[in-house]
Length: 316
Image (cartoon, rainbow, N blue to C red; front, side):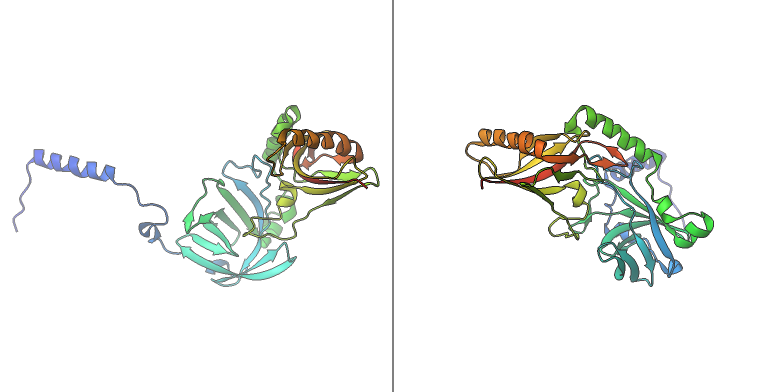
């Protein structure tokens, strides 16, 4: 068979055309058909090995969100088969069985959570948390989160320590929180959620306080157990007040325990300015003098944090 060689100039011209077309083509999007050709992950080699999560952090290595949300390591998990895990439920205070579904390559749904498997060995696991919206991964708004789990055997017999010790926030978390505490001390508007939330105690019998508590997460209502410290909510009733009133407001408790009215959470149309003055007066008057306030803390450091207050006055 005879082969014919193209002239060198023509060859070079065709190369430029092909290279230009290739440069104009977009890479296949993640999650596309072309991205799904890799083999699915398998948990077969780690069946019946108990793992405990020891660290959860953002891509910057910090375990706290700027608004104060703490990424607490909480998974205790054992893969029983390719489609079943035993996982500890914080709400039910016991181990329960949940389904495992491998979607494609390293993406799986474990106990109703989407993750990407980054590492899988008998000693350790590393996952990336995925936020799936309308069957598409969206980590831009939430930030990338990574989970590290060690087998219980590895923790005990190789590291010679405990899971509780490994789960303690590292020094970099302490430095990060200390910087935020310092900023909030100079400007209480830089307040952030306290993992040990504010405590309010009545000083007088005519004022009563109850705190709302979230007992279990509800994804449909966008409520989680973390809301107990992210949005601590107090119901306050004042008997023998100067008038009947019912207000819902946001307040900051600074690092010294002083209350600062921030804004109303009521729908106001008429007389908004005068009502805001009344609410501020209630905070500066009734609440400041009739309530003993303990500021919120994170990693043992007191700092300014937000609370929500429903205050009702009853003119007996």
